[in-house]
Structures are given as C-alpha cells and as structure tokens.
Length: 315
Image (cartoon, rainbow, N blue to C red; front, side):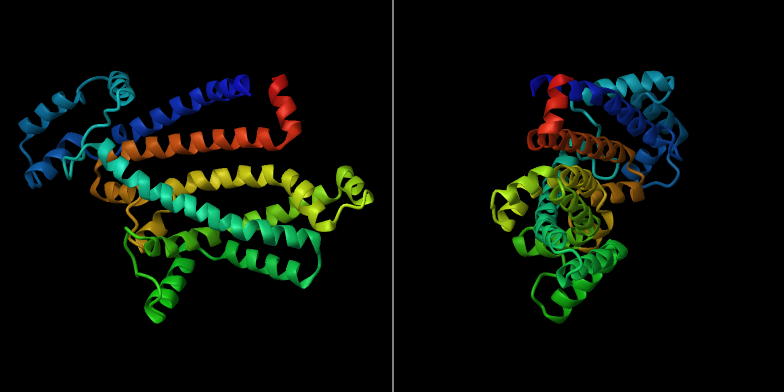
C-alpha cells in the first residue's frame, strides 16, 4: 500500500503545480489593477493618487515580470502566507480557516445523508428489478437529477421553515441550522449516484461468486449485503469522492440561500468585492481539498476491491 500511496502523491504533483499557476493567474490576469483596488478599499476613495498606486505596486511586486511574481507568490504560499484581504485587512489564511470548518461540516453531513439514500434504494432496486420499489427509486432519482439545487433548497425553506416553522430559516451555529442545507445537497448528490449504485449492484449480482454463494444456500439478503454490495461500492465511492470535492467549494448557491459561512460563500463575496488575494487562496485550497479527497478515495478503493489492490501492488 505504501508504494501505491507514494506513486499517487507523485502523480498529483503536476496537478497541484497547475492549480497553483491557475490560482496565481486569477489575480494577475483579472481586470483592474490590484494595487488600485486595494487602495480604494483602504482609503474609501474611487480615484486614489497615481503616485500611491505606483508605490503600492512596487511594494506588492507588481512591477516585476510575471514569472518573477509567480515564484515570489509560490514561495510565500509554501510558507503559509496567502496575503491579506483588501476589504477587511484579515489574513487570507485566517479567513479560509474560519470558512473551512463550516464547509467540512456541510460536505460531510451531505455525503452521509446521501449514503443513507443511495445504499438501501440502490441495493433494493437491483435486488428487485421492475418492482414498485425499483420504479419508485428510479423515478425519485430522476426527479433529484432534474431539479436544480436552489429549487430543492427553496422548497425545503418554504415548507419546513416558513410554513411549518420546524427549522431555522438560515444561519450557522447549531445542528438545526445544518439540516436544510445538508438535505438540499444530499438530494442533489443522490440522484445520479442511486442509479449508479443500482447498475453496479446488478452487475455484481450476476457475477460467478454470487451464484456460488447462492448455490451454497446462503440467504439472499446476506448475498446482496455481504458479497454484491462490497464489490459494487468502489465506483460509487469514486463518484462520491468527486462530489465531496465539489461540495467543499462548489455549493455556492445553497450556502447563499441558507447564509452558510463556507468556502463557497467566501469565494463569491471575494469575487464581488474583487478581493483577489482571497479569491486566489480559495481557489488554491478548494483544489487541494479536491485532490486530497480523491487520493483518499483511491486508497479506499484499493482496500475494498482485491482486483484494484493487486494492480496497485504490482504497480
């Protein structure tokens, strides 16, 4: 396993390098002068003096060639220095650290809820193809796939918060605040994944080892849950890993609806304010989280699937 992990980490190095370049260019190639934008925020003046702008450009290193700026920025980034927000003066690392916890809570809760939907409905649909359970699960998954996140969020918001007054309208700080955004994202994530789970389960149930287990008199529920499901899980977990990376930074609309202070909200606010150091930091952190989650999913897949494990050890 250890050589496999080293090999995967080595393969991720070019990806992370590309991400760092993209994050840097988000500042360098964006419209407007970063020094002028910073002075506008600091002085509350729409037209800061040109001399002050030029002095800040020199201080920020913007008067140097682009490749020099990149290497200086990369060196600071590797030391944990992502700069400071133009708007608040707060360290970007501190701002992202405050947003990372809420994003992790929301993403983790959403994936757990999605698994509660995916595993039973996907397995039952595969075990009873053509039954009312199968038709209901596939209809529900199609509705979930076809409905945008914000529509699910607005419906839950109106029904459970406004009409029934069961849950808080929005905010952060308690378990009840987490329910609506987590359910919204779980519904969106479970649509395609339930269908994927059904397909993988049907393929697993047709394998020879399942037929052998049945011929030995093993119960159907044990065959389905112990043998077929374990071998159907790796593709599903791979897809959920990609979803987990998306949920960390891509759930912008849901975070905005429920006023959830995660990375998505921080990124949107920074883009609106053209606070480019914060934008850079958010892009970099979201990409790194996405890459690390996919590495963890690859390791889990190796552990679950003996065929993948053998190929990993041989490699």
